[in-house]
Length: 286
Ligand SMILES: [Cu+2]
Image (cartoon, helix red, strand yellow):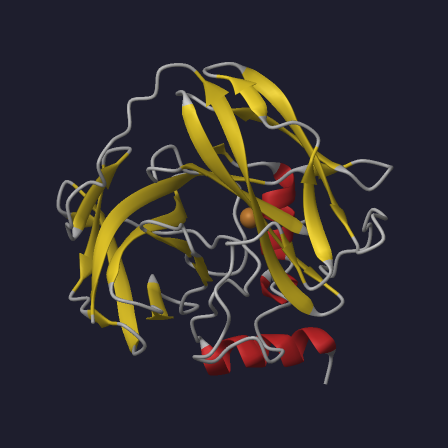
């Protein structure tokens, strides 16, 4: 069996929530780029190298809480930004000897995914930096408002999925927002996105299903890197990182939340030629 087919079967068989293990797939906001289409047409899913290789299960360590893990470190070249201005974010992944890691596991164009969010869980961005010849990564980044932002680099190296995180700063007067209230409906770009019947308990697998409609009518979703959507969940307080992949045919995810409390869910899907991001505050019972 080909490696791709094997991984595809693993993906379909488990559909398990991987606590931060899966590599993100997505292009963030705005119009699609050609490489998105290419990856999608190519099957896309086998780029999620972390899914089928022993990364799933309930007892996964929390991800996205440390700048170093498994001998690898996320090293930012700068962490200070002017709020509201676009500037390059540059970084590299280095090994225990400080040598830049160049070889990442994925076969497709998505070898590293970057999530940026302000500490109050506003201003979510999902970016795909470009790898430069020296192995470092670069992406244009705008931090719209002053504040401290968490940046997550999500990738797979030597068969192990990693989510390393660090902080960025946009200077200025910070106006922190409370987390929006728990609600099953979010509106984005004129689309109504509904989280259907989800009750979640800490440590137990729960189902998160979403529907998308416009003016009361269901909206057709295009595949997005081999699935109907992608979901990132961040825990309120420490921003522990949860990245899941859905059912192949529906916006359905199986998730095991590690603790009681509130989480912010960022659902990304493709419709009408664009990628949309809907955000929900989700309460997990103890
Ligand atoms: Cu991504």
